[in-house]
Length: 132
Figure 1 (cartoon, rainbow, N blue to C red):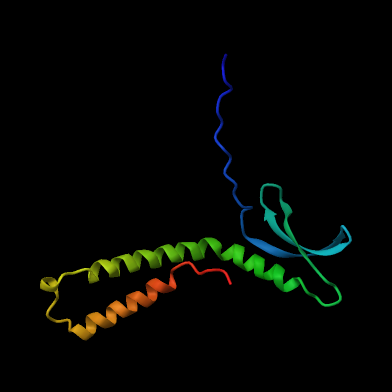
Figure 2 (cartoon, one colour):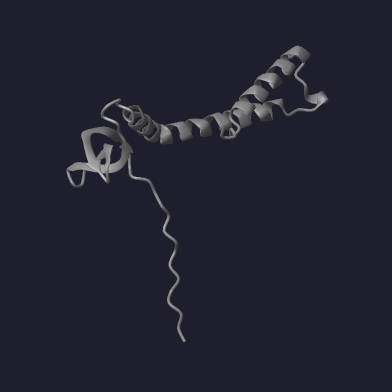
């Protein structure tokens, strides 16, 4: 008995950026919605990516739509920046990883303590934060 060939699981990817807050608001399922779109170059038209609840009396939801767009459009560059910072911290860490006999005589104890404290602060700033 032959088994069907195994297929690789599909890896979910997000809709390509950049996204933008559309000028279109619409009603659906009893609510008002603000569209978040992207321009599809292949189709030569806007494509809806997401909808955010919108209250036309107060404008609530518009700021959320802009926040989502900014976060999504910035994600790749922020992730790359974090990787650069992590590499820089690893480099700094390697410079500070020395035994007593390897200490550069130009550096004072206060210098190394200050550098180590700066490294510790930067390293702590890059640690994942617990959600509040």
